[in-house]
Length: 166
Image 1 (cartoon, rainbow, N blue to C red):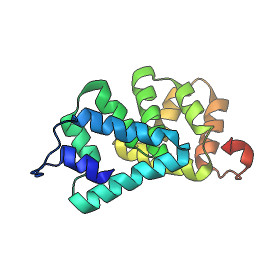
Image 2 (image 1 turned 180 degrees about the horizontal axis):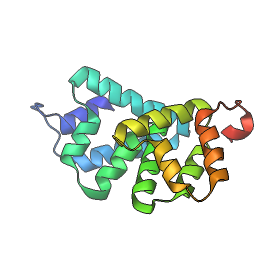
Image 3 (image 1 turned 45 degrees about the vertical axis):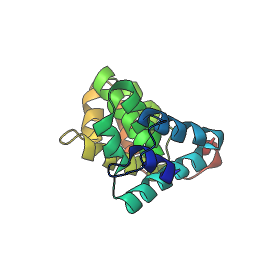
Image 4 (image 1 turned 60 degrees about the vertical axis):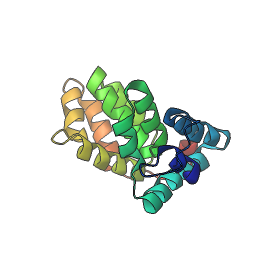
């Protein structure tokens, strides 16, 4: 898959395959991996990204950012991201667009404690001065019980159970 993708989008490729557009090449990469289970699909996409970066020294996320626009770009970036990056994206978009505590509740309550810590770190890095905890405090000023509940989820450690995993 990497070689096929490189033959289509490669910057210095002399034998560039012009029969398929770059949009179609990425769509095939995404659609071909939809037939497998979700975890293996994600691992496969991450492996393609890493292999492509290692072999051709091109970051696919950067390539997508520079060469695509609009909803197709967001769709590709979302599909090529890890599960925790997807959760952070949903959280960030929900907070920016809706400014609603329900977004935080729905994302946090479905994750395990190690994933919550990764999500908090990722969110805090992406949002610069707005930490997730400060946004929770701001959105729960009128409901102190909900604030305490969410702070405990973000600070605490959960026991790993099968019921959380589905």
